Amino acid sequence: MLDVEVVDVSDTEAHELLLTLDPLSGLALTDAETAARLLELCPVDDPHLKALWEQLACKEADPPLQEPEGKEEAWTEQHQVLVTCAGEEAQRALLEELTRRGFDCRALTS
Image (cartoon, rainbow, N blue to C red):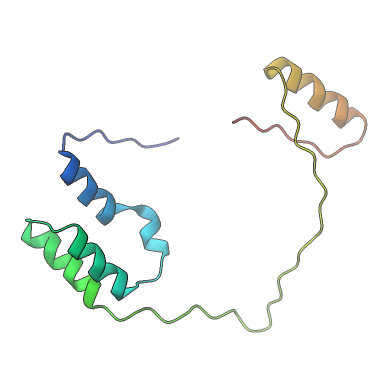
């Protein structure tokens, strides 16, 4: 399930919100130089938002992530085929046929 929120904001406010609330940004490392540049490119009037952005711009870059010791990544080579079907029924029939023949299959819808 996907949560959706509809808000009535101007284009400028929407831009500010996206730069501030982007959930992927929580996964990224802080780059103070880039944060400072964003503050230059997208000046804001709200004092709270401005303070938050300035805090990010002044923050030292996060240290690089270290690989856990003694943990090797295991990669298994795989060979796969992606087939585009005419519709759901054709996909179902092909999936059933290939499964019957012993192939490890799964459906993908895009």
